[in-house]
Length: 113
Image (cartoon, rainbow, N blue to C red; front, top):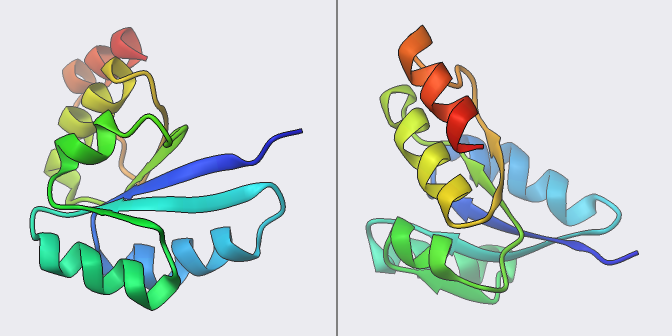
């Protein structure tokens, strides 16, 4: 079996404190990229955890062909937008809760996925 190649869509505390360390310990998981609206922040977190690629935008991370699955720890109101964008980019998605703020957005996410 091949490893799942994870991209982290943000430098949020939950990602740095819980998810990235957990993925680094998990079998068949590799954190290969991190994206942030702030390229310097992405580079700092990448260096901290030994992540090979740091992207200065969320779009750049989603365009990375070396990423299979994206973890989305963004603020709640951004979950639907970026889950849909990740699905459209052909990525699998693990989104922090809540997935969406209302039923209409949940239906949009389901349709995109």
